[in-house]
Amino acid sequence: MAAARALAILACAVAAGCTTPSHEEPPARRESGASDAVARAERDLERLRSADAGARDGLTARDDATAGSTDPSAGSDVAPARSDAAGPDASRAPRVLATVGERVVDANDLADAALYFFRESYYESLAYLIGREIARAEAARLGVRVERDEVERAVERELDQQRNELRVQFGGEITLEQFAEDNFGEDPESYRERVHAIVRDKMLRDRVIRYSLVRDGSIDVRELAVEERALAEEIRAAAIEGAEFATLVEKHSVLATRRDGGRIARVRAGFFPSPIEAAVSELEVGEVSPVLEVERDGRSLYHLYRVIRRVPGDRVPFGAVRDSILAELDDSPVTSLEVLQWNRSRERLYPVRRGRP
Image (cartoon, rainbow, N blue to C red; front, side):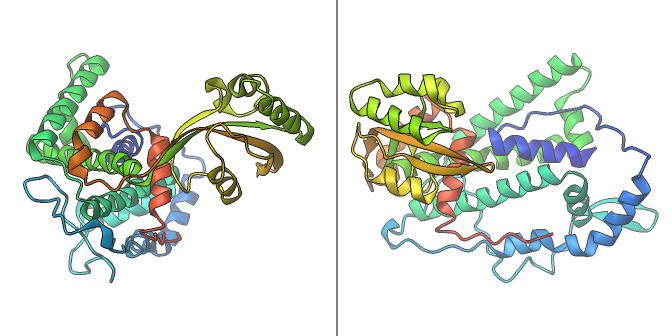
């Protein structure tokens, strides 16, 4: 019960940074085949136990000589740096979650069970943790900071939101204090610290993502894809002759982006597969790409791209653009697609070696 809720909170943090509480009981495990599943899980425990350690071992970083020596931690709320290059600290015993007679259930056991029974959520949570470490490293490298009073205000808003959602779901029968105790075995102060850490990391991540757009630059494009090359060539000819590209997208494209005229905003380097990236990078604003064949789900699609805006990069210090970035985040929060795109681009700087279960 606590495992499922903890994973749900992490998954929510991956997508939007919120920690929406859930007090629903998980479905009961089916009796049919349950003993077989347990037996398989027990056989796999030792093999699975290395997955987290392997992933943690893989987080390494390279210094950026252009970043200067700005210390983002002065007067700010920054997570402590962690280095597990030689593996997790063997002297630190895993947290005990329960005891059954003389047997102990610890955090490693929970990770094993989560990987086996909640595999998708496990890997979503692992991706969140990897992204968190990358964001922390980038914040330190680029001098991005979050002030403590900003985090405290955001924590209050988050806790108020959780209280409101509990009232809506349960009519006041369950308080936030009860939720913290039931899900994490924590008192209100400890639970607040947990939320504080999640909120702080999300704020830091969002600022780093938007600041990296300022530094690296971006483009806005419209994309179109059809199933026949001949049709793609006809559409390209029509666009070159002056037909509105967005209208052509809405009429012909088989991609979900057709609803917005194919617009993809604020695309950074590394977002597209290599062949598309190479073609788009050479386009001038308003220019239409050649027809590009891309394999998707075992079938060929024929793509066209039109660049509608280019924003050049500017290596200005974070402090010089901080206020504009915060105003932009208030108006347009970071999306899950942005997070995914940014994580992929930054894995070039911070190679990630994921353990294999």
